Image 1 (tube, rainbow, N blue to C red):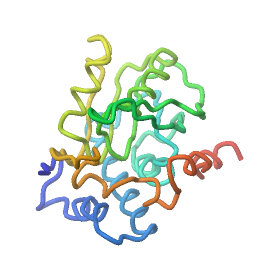
Image 2 (image 1 turned 60 degrees about the vertical axis):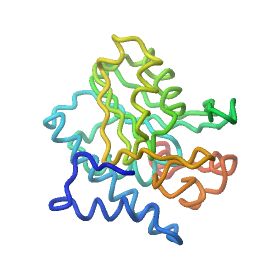
Image 3 (image 1 turned 90 degrees about the horizontal axis):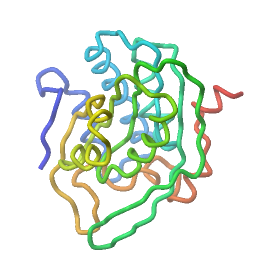
Length: 226
């Protein structure tokens, strides 16, 4: 079952259509990428209203597979244009097949400097077990000490927020604000969230499997170092 948040059928039909497109059978790579970019722009608009366009010194962090479409949509839309970027390439190791406990080690990263970070925006295509997000936050929080942290994803599993916050002390948890458009409550026996984002994001974006996608350098990164 899916519950929509921060959007309504009367006012946000394009965003809802884009969310539904992600789980459409046979969706093309271009359409899948385009849906994520459109959703990212909608999330950026929502963020502007949440912070009243008062971001301060800002870092946006994301996984490498989310950079060129979802995160790019957020960057294109938020009113704060001078941002630092952090991109992470993560692996994925299943520690327990029964509980679907996973570990997502950081393989490599691209992190721009920032001083006096007021806002950290962490963007993820879907948050289920929260292991990827947790590792990225652990890597960043001690380095940049943000005043507020927005966890931003089109879709979240119903237990994701609780799963993430239990791994951090209260003085960090009070900084979190979770921004999403859909809460899903069902999983397949494999652990895949239903309807989620239509399955594994990497092949649907045309990036290959978990190993192949880590060979991809996002254009968002190339444009900053080129």
